[in-house]
Every structure is written in structure tokens, then in C-alpha cells.
Length: 499
Image 1 (tube, one colour):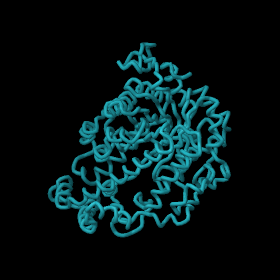
Image 2 (tube, helix red, strand yellow):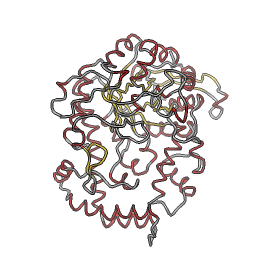
Image 3 (cartoon, rainbow, N blue to C red):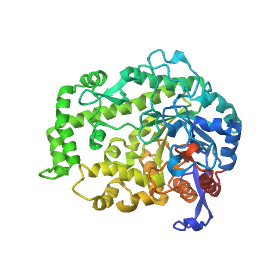
């Protein structure tokens, strides 16, 4: 048993009878309490900075604020995005807030001279002229709270995240990706120098100008093969990607030629066309004859990882004491392709802590949507009912069957515990593991599993039982019910971590 985490039996929990006990956790100075919550700027305006911080501190034992400081996504900076399906939470205004999005701190133009993306201040009426970090930090420090700006790529045009109708950044179309057919797409290219330098500038701006404890960075981009599986053309073939690839000895024109039959395969498979040797064999065959597709896949994914690594370096250059946390997409453990591409041990080399996203009640629906794309193409010759137990074996999970996984969601004692345990084992003590616990993460279907206080409670207990060192309640306080979050407070009380 590690000296840094001493455990003693505290009590027997009737709602946790599978384990028969609850842990009391004692943290050393090396493993300080980390009980965080993701929170949007609008909540501080709606409920008042001091009053809200008192509730988070006293009622829930939260000591880390992960603040959505820049986004065009309602899930990050707005009120509850699923209110039409789920109603309003038990706090804050009971009305939608029209989202324009942008940056919710004041302008520091000196940091943006190397990019033309320099006019992106938020224009939302309720937050106009407000620097949310300047308002929060002094009051948070009085209460011993830590502060992390929470930023995610992509910032806009993200299905299911309550995107704003348009993005008013001048010249933004000039940095968009170019697809296989030479069309501009809907996301900026990560290899475009202006877009990449914009991210450098944002991170340096935060690190230089605010009394923060670090940055939480989230990278949720679909790779070229990811897009193909979803029925979309591969990305990106803009001049910057072509130049980067050419410098690495990749024949871009040969890659584009290779993508044509692979793209056609996915279109035929999804359309239900007859494939003589079946969908899986035909997929392997088209890859065999067009290996350049895998070369491009690795090139794109590694450049995506490079952005993470570069931002980590900028944070450390500005201040070695600042922490760089990775908010890691749940698709990384729900998709075998991404699981192979993003190993935890590797990510531990460019982070100080990692936060696996495990939104338990919502996860069944995410898994259903994820695997539905595979069953439309590569796995279309085997039923989801047959494949699900096998896929769970591949992914190291054991959850509900296909026919009721949406309605049941994933179980905290298998899912949260399993993902935390696997991550702790994989990072080998190099970084800390803080689990992303879903608290009323937005549902997209009426029959989808609902979050409950007990789900949240058991998720917190599972985290510490599996060796995690902290929790982050996610995805956004504005969408959480306080009554649901009370389940977290109960678990922290049982663990001796609430005060």
C-alpha cells in the first residue's frame, strides 16, 4: 500500500453492498486534495461570484475551479444545453441564454501579434466587458481554491455541444481544413500556422497574466480514418498539411489517390452494396492495396499530438510550477482505433495529470453512437448484439448489452472503477489521475439513462478505490442539479475529503 494513500475501513454502505465498505482517504502533501468542477462564466453572472463559491466550497467540498474561458460551445460557456429535453436545473435562471461565444477575459493584444486571429472577445450581452478570471481569482484564493482555465479544441461547430449559430472571427474561413475533394470544411486546420500560433498565444496569455494553477487542455479532433468510418471525406489537404507531409517524405498526391478507393469502400458499405468477401475482409483488402492511408493517418494524428506537446512546453516555459492537465476524450476508450492511437503512457510524457472522461449515465449512448458507425461499414456483417460482448473484451469493459445500453448507461463500479484502474496502471506513477465524473451530462434521447445522486456517489468512491487522486465534476456546473451533486458531497464526506 503506497504511503501517500493510507486507507482505513470507515463504514458499511447499504447502497454499496457489493463492496461492503467505504474508504477513508488520507492524502499526503504530494497528493493534495483535488475536487474540481467545470464551470462556465455565465454561472458566476447568474448566481454571483461570492455566493456561488460559498456553495461550491461549503456544500460540495470543491477546491478546484476549471473555468470555461473561451469557447463558442454552450456546453463549455453557457447554461444547460439540453433544457428542452430535461428541463432546467434546480439553480440559476430558468431560461436559455443566447450564445455568441468567444473569449471571456479582457484583451491582451501584445500576445497575438504573430497571428491574424486577434478579434475574438465574447459579445454575449450578460458578459460583455467582463474578465471572468479577474472576477473569480481573488475570491477563489480567499477560499483556498485553485484555478484552471478549461479550454478545448475544437472551439466551435461541434455537434451536440450547443454550438453558436456563427463565429464572428474575421478571416477565420482562411484557416479551414481542405478535404479530399479540395473543398473547405467546417473546422480550422491544426497545421495552419495562424491557427496553431493562436493557441500558443491563448495559453501564454493565461500563464503570463493571471494567478492560475495551470491549464486543462482537451483535444477532441476526429482523425482522417475516424471521418471515413463516419461517412465523411478524410482531412486535411490544405497547403500547410501538404508542406508538412512533404517535408516528412510523404507523397501527398499518392496519398490522395489511395484515399479514393478507401472512401468509395466506406460509401458502398454504408449504402448496403454487396461486397463479395464481406465488409471486414474488403476493408482489410482496400487498406492492403492502399497503405498510404495509414501513413497519412499517423502523420495527422502525430501532428495533433504535437499541438498538445507544444502547449505543454509553453506552459512550462512561462512557469515551471504551473500544471498542464489533459482532459481526455471518452472516445479514446470507447473506440478501438483511438485506444490504439492514444496510449496513456505516452500522454503521461506531456502532462502533469490526466482526466479520463467517464460520464457514466451518458456513456451507453456514446458507445451506441460510436459503434453504430462501425456497424454501418467495417462490422456490418455481424449484429451489434453479437459483437458487443466481444468489443467489450477488446476494450477492457463489461457493461450492459446492446439492446439496453442506452437505457442503462454504464455502471460506476465497473466503468469508472475500470477506467481509473487501467489509467493508473498505464501511467505508472508518472502523472496523477483525476477522474472526470459525469454529473447530469446532457442526454440526447428521452429513453437515455438519467444521472442520479447515487450514480455520482458511487463514481467518486470507485475513483479513490481504484487509485485515483482526485475528481472533476463535469461537463458544466450550469447543467447540473444541486441535488445530484449532493451525491458527490456524500461520497467525499464518507472518504473524509469534504472539508
